[in-house]
Image 1 (cartoon, rainbow, N blue to C red):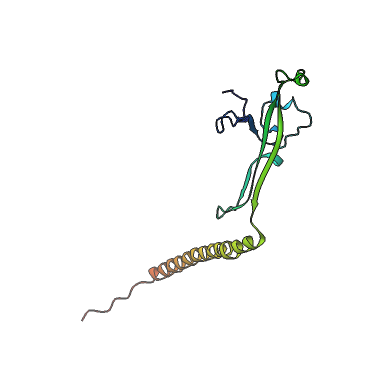
Image 2: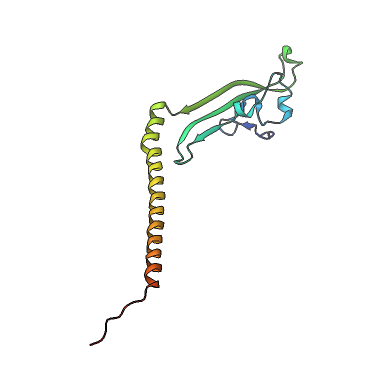
Length: 157
């Protein structure tokens, strides 16, 4: 089995002797050895990487995408004279992209049912905390005021 540079994966392990090599589109992250063989490649991490956008409070995935490029080695073949002058090149064959995004209805549902509930709970949390601090201050003031006053004892009979 052949060894490949960083971020270039052979599928020959998955399918017997499959001549398919997987990379990110435009060979993003692959060795310059492979990229310099093909003109017109412009790898851009924003366009070609796998991504997932997650809602901060709930951890709900809002959108995501996976992009993969299938490549094959193009090389000379014995007994076919037209391929004599070919140099071995890792040639892009097909680029596959798949993704998912929550529709507006689901986003509205999450916002209405979950996010608004979390905001309400946050308000209740802070209101309870402030109310508890207020009650503690009132009790402290009551204690300080009545502690200063001398206690009148009833005469003993």
